[in-house]
Every structure is written in C-alpha cells, then in structure tokens.
Image 1 (cartoon, rainbow, N blue to C red):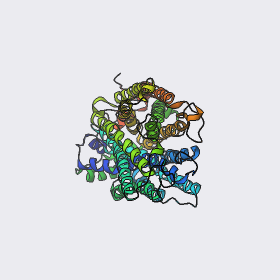
Image 2 (cartoon, one colour; image 1 turned 90 degrees about the vertical axis):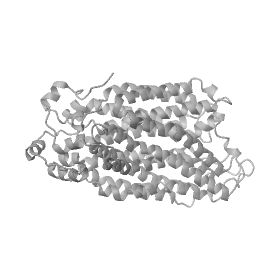
Image 3 (cartoon, rainbow, N blue to C red; image 1 turned 180 degrees about the horizontal axis):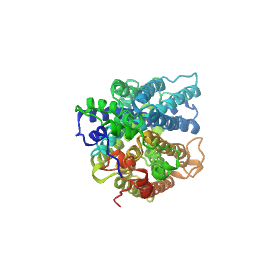
Image 4 (tube, rainbow, N blue to C red; image 1 turned 180 degrees about the vertical axis):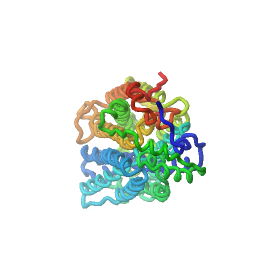
Length: 535
C-alpha cells in the first residue's frame, strides 16, 4: 500500500508557479549557460589557435592544430565533465545539494578566466596549460549536471516539473548563441582595428599578433554570467526532499519551505518518524537492481548514444560547413575573417535550430510526456541524418548548400526537442531522493563518455578515405557521408532503449521513483512498476 506523503512535499507538488520557481531556473541555468558557452566556443577558436601556434612558413595552407592537440583541446573538458558528474553527483547525495552547489560554480569561474590566461614559452606549453585548465573547468561543469537537475526537480511542482527542468537545460541554447555573438563582436572589432590580407596573399601577415588576444577574450567572457549568480546560489535553502528524506529532518524542511512558499507548513512528527524507519537500500544492492536496474541502463544508454551524435556534430560544425562549401577555403581568408565566418555560421544554426528545439521541449514536455518526445526526437534525428547522408554528393554540389544547412539545422532542432533535453530531465525524476543525484551523475557521465567518443572519434572518422584529401597529420577515415550513417545508427539504438525508461509525467517524485510504495507491493509489481508509457 502506498504511503502517505509528507505535508511539506505535498505542498511543493501542488504549489502554484511562483517567482521562486523562475529564480531557481535562472540560478540553476547559469551553470548550463557557462557549460554550453565554453564547450562550443572552443570549437570556434581552434582554427585560430592553429594559425597562431602552428604556422608553417613554407605551407600553402594556414597552420592547423595537429590531430593529437586538436583532440586534446576539444575533448579534455569533456573528460573533466565526466569525472565531475560522477564525483559531484555522489557528493550531492552525501553532503546535500546546496553544500556543493557553489563549489562547482566557483570552479567554473576560476577556470574560465585561467583558460584565457594560458601561458607558455612555445605552442606546446600554451596548449598544455590550456588543456589543464579546461579539464578542471569541465570538472566544475560536470558537477552542475546532477546538482542543477536534482535541485530543480525537487523544488518544482509536479504539474510543470518537466518544463522547469527543461528551462534550466535550455539555458545551454543561450550559452551557444552568446558564444557565437561574443566571437562575432570580438573578431569584427579586431578585424577592423588590425586589418590583414588573406593567407594566399601574405601568409605571415594574415595572422596579426593581436589575434592571440581574441581567443583569450572569447574564452574568459564565459566567467561573467556564472559569477553574477554565485551569491544567489549561496542564498538558496537546501531542497526539502533532501532535508526530509535523506537528512531525515522533516521539521527543518517544513521551516525552509514555509519561507520559500510563503505559507504555514507544520509537519506531522509521527509521519516523520515513520519516514526515518524506512528500509534504505543502496546503489549496489539487489533491491536497487530489481527496482531501478533497467531504468538506469535505459537512461545511460540513451544519453551515451545521443551524445556521440550530438557532440560529433556540435564540435565539428566548422569542418562540415567547410566540406559542403558554406565556408570559403581557409587560404582565401585572414585569421580573424575565418573566425568571424565560422562564428556567423554556428550562430545561425544555433538561432534557427538549437534554441527553438529547447523551448519546444519546455512548451510540450508536460503535455505529451517525456517518452513521446524522446522517441520522436531519436526517430527524426535518424531521418534527417539519413537525409543528409544518402544524397550527400547532391548536398555538396554548388547551389545545394542552403538545403544541406536547413537539413542540418533540423537535426539539432529534433535533438533539443527530443533526447538532448529528455535524457537530462528523466534521471532527475525516476530515482529515490537519497540516490537521485548519484544516478543522474552516472547517467550524465555515460552521456559524456559518448561525447568523448564523438569528439575524438569523429575527428578521425570524418577524414576523407582518399589519403591525398585528408587534413595534415590525419590518417584516412571513412568520410563525412559514412560518419553520418554511423551517427544515424546511434540514434536507432537510442530509440530502442527509450522503451526501458519510465514515464514520470504528472507524478510526484515519490510516485515516479516508487518511494511511496511498500516493499511487498514493489516486489509484486516488479521492476517496471513505475512505468505508464503511452505506446
């Protein structure tokens, strides 16, 4: 038989949308703004870094980062993020969400600034320093995933919980576009002040020395929004669900939420005592495996295959745009002109495909549910990637580039109005409070493992199969067309494993995770007890 809900938790579930909900969205979302800003701005400046630090006077093409350096610069923050998701996810369940929330943000601020101040006597020293600080920046970013998702889910009411968590994640879209806009402003300003010829006209003069400041300013700007919200993070009270269900102090939870909700809440001491006597199974117990093993496998696999596809495309947009002819050949541009045109292309994709997708999820997730949106997203991503891959030679023909960009933007739209949002939301809803942050961290780390595969793998796989057409230093790959087929296959796997993930729409967190069920009832209903999926 289902247990009665604590009054404080019921008050949160039925609370009307108030100012504190929107405040929490902004405070929690600023970490994701910084995350997206950093992860995607590094893809804007890598070609500039190649021109500055790996210029070869005798070459007919501009300098470019060697394969191992490019892989490290693009992927090291993802490695840090994976480690941070596991560590801070676990710590958020042990010490409390609020206790470590400010730590992750301050780590992001410090490392954002330090990345822009990367130093060294030569190219190797600068790249090594940049990679060091980007790893720890990623570590802080990683902590924000489980903590922000868990905090927002535990603050929200059950009617609009999905939209609130999605809105936090949607701040990534603003981070993407802000990164593009900052790069446009900085590159345009430097280009106006230090006008330089194209590389083919004057290789040495095409990259003015002042260009070295441009990429540093772009990277450091990401610290500003995060720093602005640090004070408000420290002012947030601990979530009532952690205080009541994990710390077992229902009286304090009621007092905290009385202030937040601006209503009197008095908890029943007897019910709080009953709560404290519940059986508390652990992450590695048979009980957890029985209740949530399939759920955790579903969230991990879906996030893993999604991020292979999502980060492959996001980090290497510039290479795809160059391959289809949307960007001019590098030797026909100066260093700052190339930065400007890459930023313009990625900003347009973010504006037309990325941001609308996030906010479609916000609008519809509590209407049609998480399952339907994730299933639709994986299906449509598969369709559009095959639509790019099958007639790839048509898209690369002169005059058809706009069609390619439109199709490409639609893959981002359905990633964000689909699994890129739902894989973040669902793990914050379907696991017990004492393991919620940990399980979200494990799921998110699986996603970042996929991102690492995408970031490192796509770099090599997308190279032409013709050795004469590969980028300097790279072995032949399978080409962009075949890489798109592989990414479409990843989406098919995500579609299948979505069926292992339960629907939490319209339920309280305790109902979705089964915390309100007696052990006997859980054993009778089996591991799929929380599943009510509209197939």
